[in-house]
Image (tube, rainbow, N blue to C red; front, side, top):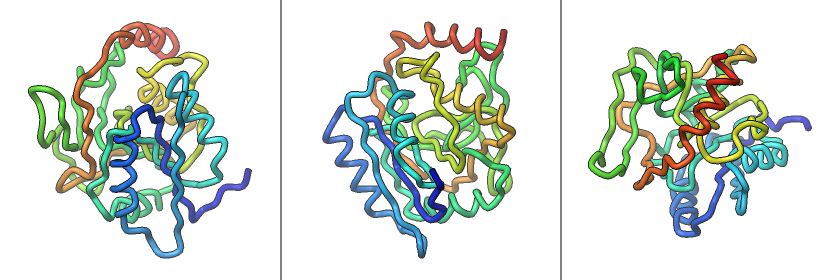
Length: 218
């Protein structure tokens, strides 16, 4: 499928209509660069986030794809313009809002030094989160947090390994780098996104961590 270089597609796996409606409100209020068009794909009833993302990726011919959680609200109205400026460098394959410069040996991102910003609502840690300052327009990282991931190249998500809702983001970061593309986190004077994630479910997190270790670190 030939890619449409002037199209930007937002992709969400959705199981909560209210969150979807709120996310859509912020998307619809973004400033769209001249000549560009946007599309939104909401994937419902996905068995895993990788399955949902692959299905949406294959169904869209947009060059630029923004994979986001349904509970992410974009507050930087110039995000699309900022994204396109970064992607003028065709060695950059993916952009995230928070990432780690060097991934720890066991693949857990928050055990590594992170950079980036977001507004969050994790219990006991709500408000603005700043994870290290960035000098320049952006900083290269090894992996990014999956709440918001922007790509300009399509690389399949590893649904053969990550058939749940964890470690898909770190895996995709590894796959992107294996293809020779850089991953960056932009310098945000104020966070570009709100992540209203609330309660964090780690029920299967360490199960998928072991799969990640075996695939990428063995």
